[in-house]
Image (cartoon, rainbow, N blue to C red; front, top):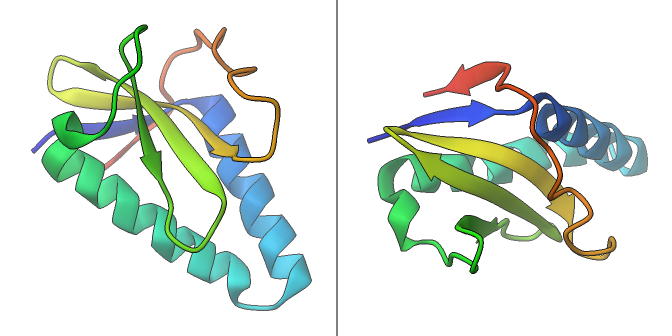
Length: 105
């Protein structure tokens, strides 16, 4: 298994999505986090099984929520670049270069 590192921008996107869903219906934000944790666990166990684009970025799709997780694989870890709503302009996050902030798993 590999380590998951979430970049600060992706962490902010997670907090924003949680707050938005929680505002819509109490408990929905928690359900979003459960869905996210499930996908991150699958990435941790099977990172190479997710689709990869020409630039080497992998994409995992959340169930029930219209979000994608974009990550790159580096030695023994998956660096989460974005947790991005599927209806936003695609790939506007691709210039992210900041260091990971915390690890999951």
